[in-house]
Image (cartoon, rainbow, N blue to C red; front, side):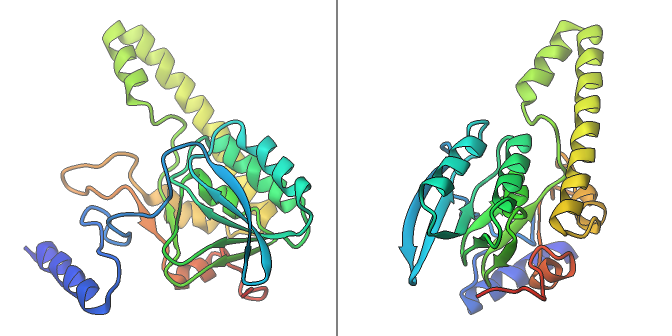
Length: 235
């Protein structure tokens, strides 16, 4: 009853303030995240406010790192990358972040109303300078090596041996990915507590007791974990 009243109060506040309605399962996050299309990420160079900007919108796939580098090399005037994405291939997100960091001074931005989720987090953190605008959403979850439930279900149907092999493979790959993510954060100047305090605290799958599987950082947390560096805050 208390949680229902709380959700009702949050919804009422959203209506009064004009803010985006909250997700009842993930109350720190918008109910309808604006993370762009579900298609492969597109890269479009445009002029915005007198600056040359690369718009990066859509799902991160294996081809993104190479395409991203080609897009930046093709237009030396690009100084910012604006990102919205529901995520995609984790390793490709990390590699895209490393490519962005190789361009000194490159700024990554999550504009107001846009959402950067999952693998997109690591692409965004590659920016030498980083901005999450007021109203921009940095959304995280507990990393998983695979979100393909079909693969897991098929292994269960095939029998215990296939299931055990799949679980062992996922555990090994996830351990390697966790190590890579930890190393990535250190190299990008992000607080490792973003992993331990926030990402690792999220549930991988929802439960009846707690349906929340996503978390959206507040403005204070974006600064606390150095997702947007205070000393180099850009406008």
